[in-house]
Image (cartoon, rainbow, N blue to C red):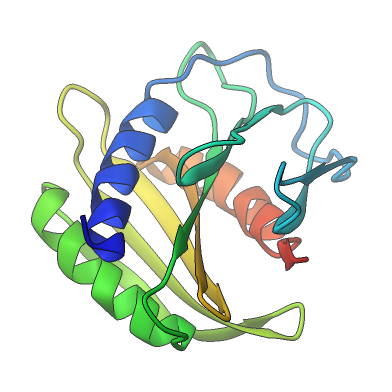
Length: 184
């Protein structure tokens, strides 16, 4: 299977798993990012609030799944990291463009809100805010950030329910978490 096709399948599976998670009580909104999590293979590190539940995966493309506390029994914010080998070195924008072709076909109601080049921690990146409607789950508002390093591609996805209160409450923290990502 081609590597970027694997991204498509992994993104679909991860988004469904992330959106279906259960929550805990609120109280983290002002929490410092106290948990530093390193990938089991030493490829990246990032920081999370102490109240988040985090699982790293030693095998497969999905390297990290993280869930923040949910408000009122609903869905809380989620973050995941997918790592995949690339056929050749490429810029983050090119990697994002290839992945978007697959996501646009697979995600029902996929709508880009904003996207563009970025620099995060001195490293080139590409970001995309978008919405979509999973089957049997509430619509999602997501931020994906793409990084590349030599022949590795990293896709960081932050998710919350696509309603104004959830987006206003969760996206600033998701942005803060994603901005701590470091390729090691």
